[in-house]
Amino acid sequence: MKDSADEFTDLPDRARDLPALLGAWAERMPDAVAIDEWDYRTHPNGSRTPTTWRDYDGRARAVAAWLQRRVAPGEPVAVLAGQGADYLVAFLGALRAGVIAVPLFTPDLPGHDDRLASTLRDCGARTVLTTQSSAESVAAFLRANDLPDDRVICVDTLPAAIGAHFDPVRLDPDAVAYLQYTSGSTGNPRGVMVTHANVVANARQAAAAYGAHHGTTTVSWLPLFHDMGLMLSVGAPLLSGLRTVIMDPLAFIERPERWLRALSANPGAISAAPASPTPTARPA
Image (cartoon, rainbow, N blue to C red):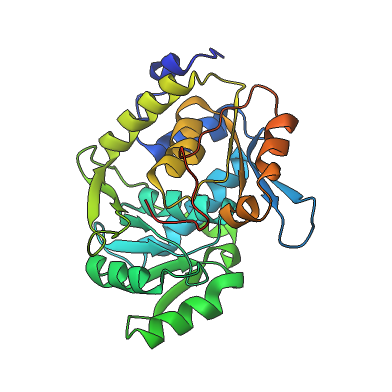
């Protein structure tokens, strides 16, 4: 296998969008670790949960199969999940189904309820992808803000086997893949339409800027609803077949040295962060 980020063209021609890239890496190295999740909620030193490329692809396919039977192509689907493998699975599953992903955050993020409600109203999402741990607070938030709550699915409860019923969707490079919302710090949040071609081009630029090559690892605590976090933990890894280490932004805020320890545990890893991290995780 060639190990340069520039060898993207070595992947099959069909691998010109993120879901196809995920499938290509799952075929090439199914048992290699794609996502290494460091969870500090239950253990002060962090419990680590690996996800292989095979499982990553299989779970995203299951989400796509569920959506395909319930959501029309091009409809918005919101991702309201905690920072972890489930978030990546939900996001890639939405893209694979041909719907428009809207990467957001759970109502548990302090001080951002108004922004979350405003964004959900603006995008018009009637389907929400979440997890068992966030489902109760998500449902309560939707009801409290008079938002649709009839299609809320926990992606961590979907059996991978339903992925076998997914009918492949041809993704138009010029079709909108997801909406990247602004922070709304100077007004209501505004959604930027990012096409499948846009995100692959951005991923290529990110991989080149990071000097990413096969065998490299990315380490990030950046929010996955943030453009930089999405490129570091999703875009560049899918482009170059990188293992990605992710942790919750709040875990970093509680103890910033956790980021440094993750870097030390992964020599040569690629990472990034804003010049002046703020005390709360904020939307892009």
